[in-house]
Length: 233
Image (tube, rainbow, N blue to C red; front, side):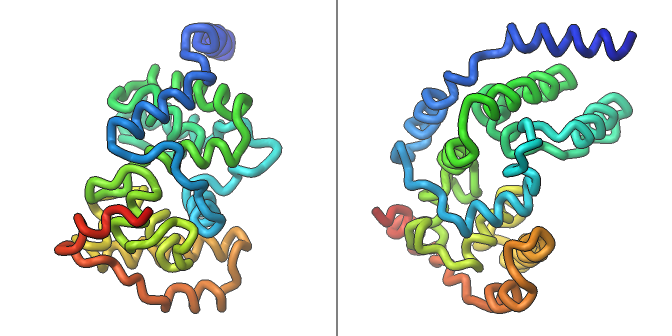
């Protein structure tokens, strides 16, 4: 009965949730709202590899429909038993949250995001999903989108990010206020180190490469120059 009820609920959500074809317009609207140039530059490989390794290691798998069923099960169970947010959102689900349900939190909303993630996954390519995500996600310090964060924190375009900088930005997304490299440099570096461990774990970097990259200077633009260096087009 539970399986049948779940299947019925899933079918209903397929019909009542918005179309994934609206995603591009929603991204553009958010970029305009935050004063972010649209379309921004495509996220560079260093950033996307760090992001995927940290947030959604099965993102490129041909068997990944945009949802991790085991993670969803943990999240739903955690919601039902009041364990708190168990996490487990794929990049597709995070994009669905940003675009369609940014300020809604409930069990039904989690299911809605799951359906929307499936729709996004079957409507857009992986690079398109990453580009939309990088265009609107929040990096802290008032920076929405990868270009604003790259220019604001480091005074350079995303394509020019070092491995150290790309890993830092990928790590910031988990908790933008907590891992802000200007306000909490120590915590930001701990998170950066975690990102490099994930890059090694998935085979994107060797341990020697990660160690060398971790030793690179971040060159964070001082807060006093933030307004001056917030754009580097």
